[in-house]
Amino acid sequence: MGSEALRFNEKTMRVLQRSAVFSGFALENIDKVIIEAEAYELTFQEGEFIRRQGEKLDFYPIVITGIVQAEMPRDSGPMIVERFMPGESFAEAIPKGMGICPVNIVASQDVRLVAIPAANVRSEESPLFERLSKNIAGEMSKKVGRLTAKLSMLSETRIRPRLMKYVKTLPSRKDGSYILPETRRDMAAEMGVHEKALLRELRLLQEEGIIALDGRRLEVLRDDEICW
Image (cartoon, rainbow, N blue to C red; front, side, top):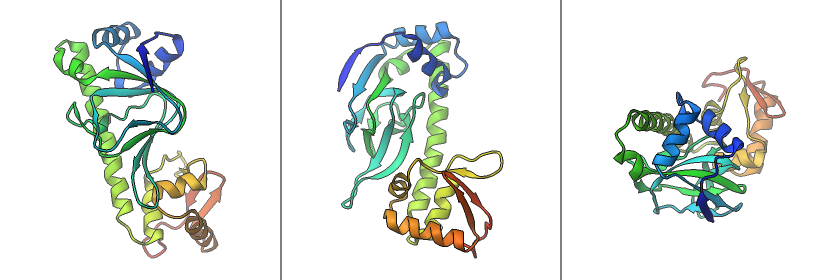
């Protein structure tokens, strides 16, 4: 892991501008907040722990490059709870500003992120920091909702209802279809099942005419509890 003063290069600013954390901010105000909050940059190599379960996370992170994973440790191997892409924050790990990580936070690729000290955000009372706090709270609320759906999915003991609930957590297209992860291995890890069992169930669902698969695109053809 490395840290350094934040470089205001064009790529970093483009990512911050499109981040929901800075929604409604003009470019010059992002600069101002970053400077006044004494934000800094952190880098992690692929596979490196950003924080382990039970450790304190005292900053609001925004991923600039790479992918970050939240993983739940298990005897059979880690289970992916959530992935965070450039522009996203994993601020729900600190739901009350400065808290304890409920999961392992790992760099699944080489990662560069901006860290905004939580204590500095809370100590400022300007309108800009009030907006920043509101944006962060909104992001946390959405992600907690996704986490609740994920835990509901993981509570299913049978693979078919678990798969149904998992699909509902995925990004959807305008036509109602869903976008699967890049690999079936990633999908199995997110569901907490064996890859072979997942492949077998997907094949059965296609044979029964319940779903249609085209690469990463999944369409539900029959969406009722009897099918699932």
